[in-house]
Amino acid sequence: MNNHPISIKRALLSVSNKEGIVDFARALSQLHIEIVSTGGTSKLLREADIPVRDVADITEFPEIMDGRVKTLHPKIHGSILGLRDTHYEVAKTHGMHWIDLVVVNLYPFVETIKKADATFDDALENIDIGGPTMIRSAAKNMGWVGVVVDPLDYQLVLTELCGKNQLSFNTRKMLATKAFAYTGQYDVMIHHYLEADSFPETLHLSFTKKTNLRYGENPHQAAAAYQMSGQMTGILAAKQYQGKELSYNNIADSDAAFSCAQEFDQPVCAIIKHANPCGVAVADTLLRAFKKAFSADSLSAFGGVIALNQLCTKELATMITQTFFEVVIAPSYATAALAIFAEKPNVRVLELNSTTKMLHEMKFITGGVLIQEKDNKIMTEHDLTCVTNRKPSTDDMQTVLFAWKVIKHVKSNAILLAKNNVTVGIGAGQVSRVDAVDIAIKKAGNNLSGSILASDAFFPFRDSIDRLADTGVRAIIQPGGSLRDREVIAACNEHDIAMVFTGTRCFRH
Image (tube, rainbow, N blue to C red; front, side, top):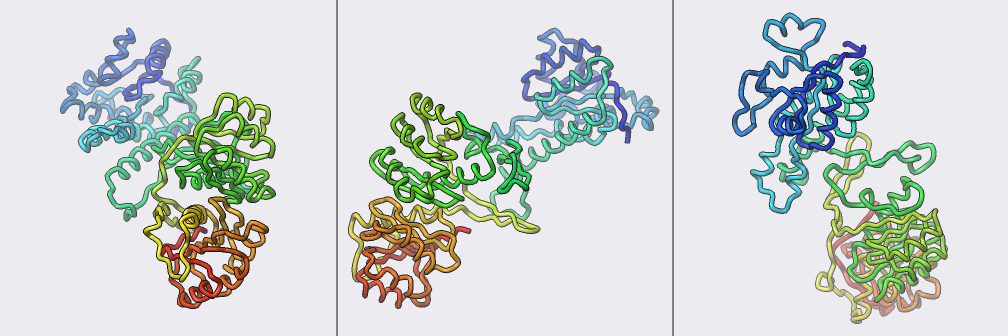
């Protein structure tokens, strides 16, 4: 392996993304580097009065089949792949001239399939063949060749070339590493598009680093944030107006808050702490929703993350800034609201206007990964079965459905108490369901009477129901399915509590 600087005398340029290519090529030409090019790139450079040779002049073979075959030729790949210290005579015999720099980016496959009117044939036509082959050839031969796939690297290359027209091995290795990641990601996106099975036999994951993080969940853990390739939605795509860089925990809690708020069409405020809701409320206005969500557990809300699903007004911003919150997320902000937040520079203000929901979620485990469909099931009144003598009233049913939407976002074992579409007590992450009931009751305090209880899984015993005696809880929503369902139903009837079964569990770990 040659790890010394190499002289750049000839460069091959063939790019789909033309950003910056004219200026880059002109600079190469001014350094007396010969430029070889193809198709549209060659035409563009000629129009800019930059000297260029067509690939066909080198291969002595025309571009054919509507441009499908241009660079797939031994005189191109031999000129890229040849080892300068051992293959010189072979190259000379076959009329090859070394190509020292390969500048290629690929057909816009991802951009094509994102178009609403894109057909299957459109997708196939935008699968690049010659480009990845040249990139991989150049990257493999990093000892003698430089490869550039990202226009953002043009200036880096030019800066190093100025003076001696040389590229160091460290730069070549960095560029080659980036090139292999680029072609790998490209192939993954093609596979995802063609693979109809949600759980394929072979799974390829492709992510692009969004940012390095100061640390992970704890200061001794290094961390970075990666965005799924081809995805421009979610917290990592949010616009940040102010505040310090988002931390690992900020991002995780913001995602949890945003996902919870996405459950609702009405004005909603979701306040999250350590990935668990501590206050969620729906109201006729966003201002009222915030007041109610904050009052649900104002002590826990301090330092939390707020997610809103409508425009944040000046009045609402004023109220929010009376307490410290790490992050505020909304689809839009009034100009006056941003001015209010600016007076509190430590608050991270994010704008995220998206209705897209993830279809799958992953959890890494030792030696593997678990993948499942995301729980996007929408529960309606028609999905519920009342199993008790008492039936929920019309008003109670609204809160029953509200409570179920929220408890999907509480860590298991989870018990949630809600009243008039506001959470009043949440028992989260308990290994004992009856303990979760006790915590929720304690949190609810004086707001317990008239509330609705939601449980993310069935009650294995009647003890949790007996805890509710004389509390004023009016109705329960739970999956059902316990061997002792009859005992639990009997307990509800004894305490005159309505209970409905969903037939669906919503564990969250």
